[in-house]
Amino acid sequence: MKIIVADDDRQILGALRIILTARGYEVIIARDGKEALDSVVANHPDLVILDLGMPHLNGLEVIQAIRGWSSVPILVVSGRSSSTEKVHALDLGADDYVTKPFATDELLARIRALGRRQPAGDDAPLIRFGPVVVDLTAHRVTKDNADGQPVYVRLTPTEWQILELLVRNPGKLITRETMLSEVWGPRHVSETGYLRLYLAQLRKKLEPESSRPRYLLTEPGMGYRFAPGGESGQGGDGVDRDDEVGPSGVKAPGE
Image 1 (spheres, rainbow, N blue to C red):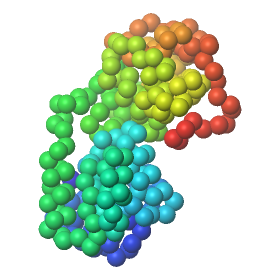
Image 2 (image 1 turned 120 degrees about the horizontal axis):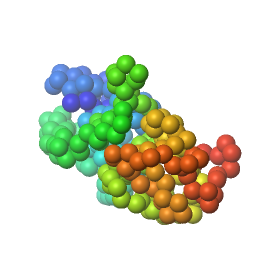
Image 3 (image 1 turned 60 degrees about the horizontal axis):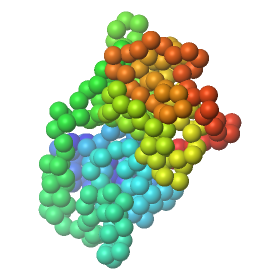
Image 4 (image 1 turned 60 degrees about the vertical axis):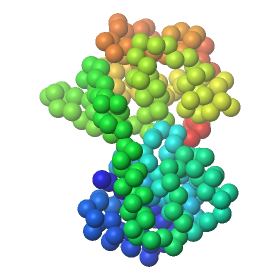
């Protein structure tokens, strides 16, 4: 079981590393919120242990960011003991909350309980289209190279969210408004240019020919559709011509 421990207190980090490593867990340390979020994206942990009062990004911001694209269990371990703080963290997506100072036995019991909640692999299968394999359990994408060997494809969290939404709904039209609301929130449903940009990035990484997509298709004027068996490539870049393209160099929300 791979665990990311995020805290800006070196003593806590050292103690948890010793305690968890001694029980056979693989421990990855993060010393601030940004490092924690980057580590979740890069390492695909089985559990995240998270303090709330960290620099760069606080724990609540990290929870919110993780929940935008991952269901990994999150255990908050914090010195903040008010019910308001606990409720806020749980409402944002934390799975459990332990107050510092904590008893080692209680913490280990909470970790075991969260580990038992992990879904079976069959609930999130491997999805293959062309040379691409999407592992919904590990949040990992590979693509066969010219020699037929799988090569890891690095996706941003937003690219992953868009791809996961499509592949979990094979053959179904996902409207642009639905995708924008799911990925960026209801306040951004009119910013269709972001989808054009991200779909173009995904096609460059995953399609045999990004200019003639076979799997990540556009339904003009409506939205997008995932075709697992592939379809004949669309003309041009495969995107809606009435999409409102975002300003050059401006990052979409959440990136």
